[in-house]
Amino acid sequence: MLTLSDPTAVDTIDKISDSPKSVPCHAHDDTERRLLRKLDLRMSILLILHTLNLMDRSNISNARLQGFERDLHLHGQQYATTLSILYVGYIVMQVPGNMFLHWSERPSVVIPCCMIAWGTISVLTGFYTGIVIARFFLGFAEAPFFPGIIFLVSKWYKRDELALRIALVSCGSFLSSAFGSLLASAILHGMQDKLGQAAWRWLFFIEGGVTILVAICAMFILPDFPHNTKWITPEERALAISRLTEDCCGKADELGKQTTMQGLRDAMSDWKVWWFALAGMFQVGGQSFFAYFPTLCATLGYDTTVTLLLCAPPWVLSGIVTFTLTWYSDKNRTRYKCFVFANALGVLAFIIPISTMNKAARYISLFLMAQITAGSPVVFAWTNDIFAREPAKRAVAIAVMNTTGQIGNVIGSYAWPSNWGPTYRYSYIICIAVLGVSTGMLGGMYLYLKHLNKQIERNERDVKDVNELREIGFKYMV
Image (cartoon, rainbow, N blue to C red; front, top):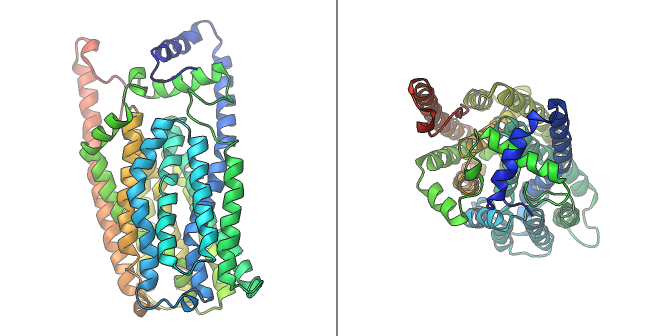
């Protein structure tokens, strides 16, 4: 079996690079298209997995509309604590989880096993009254999932293919918000007192059970990494490796030379990792409305069923905008400007409900609010772009960024107290402020990377011996 740490991997890549001399170019292109079609088809299950992930995490916000707090005797900030406690385990386990995924090289097993664990906890939550403890362990089980699937995607696709593919995965957030609300509406409306159980308990039973079943199926569908996936041909395997090598300007040796612990040390000592991580924390804090979206929709004054139905359309639009924005980002190899566009829509969305209590205006603001999340796939793709040639370091960097971002979720859980409703003006002001910080921080990174690109161009232009150049042709995407 060909491995990235095996010296023969470089020889294989060299053979692929030389193949156009004897193999027609269209044959190479046909093989690449066939490989991408096969990959896209199998990777598309990640959309379903991410949808279930967020449905199981956020079903508590739907349950809140149907007696969840009353039945469990939650008062004051106890609901906010129930939301935030999940992120304790989530934060602790993300870096070890992604390091283990890089070391094991078996995402087709690791990711579904995480799903089975959190699906089981979700089912048990319906029986168990200690909701804080259940949510704490739910965070542990879910932690390796999202950074793991982002890392898996980055191991197969080139830099100018990443944003759109990450958007496909991230669309789980839109589907969970849109169709999760529709499913919750049906369950909460039709399952009250069935078998003597409250409807919100059935919400946990059903959604957790579906997660377990889908996770078992995913074991047979998900790929591992290019060098050890069994269902691709040797030709496709070599092509998958060579595509990434060429995208990194021929740095084949760097695809396998880092150990997992070296990746940890390199990531922890790189200021760019922490800069993205801190910016992500502020960005996620600005998106804290996500967990309160049904509550914000309820301020329009409709009953539970209508409220949940009204939650769906904004996320459908958000999915469309996300695909459009990430397609544009990949096609034009631009990241920061697309991120700024999404945040600008979000700031406008927060200004509207601060200014008026008009129902139509506030509902329009919910549509605009949902568009903030369109910038997230672009930022994750940008992170992968920067550390494209160092997989072990990239695995840790993705986890660190996502982990630090969850601190924003913990803090954001307390930014929406009930006594600030129904206007939630102070909450919206907080979101505007933190979005401004994240936009400014990533603006600084944008200028820094542009400076590095100009420096690389200058070195390429001025150098007399090409062997003196450390980087040839590689440019950071900005």
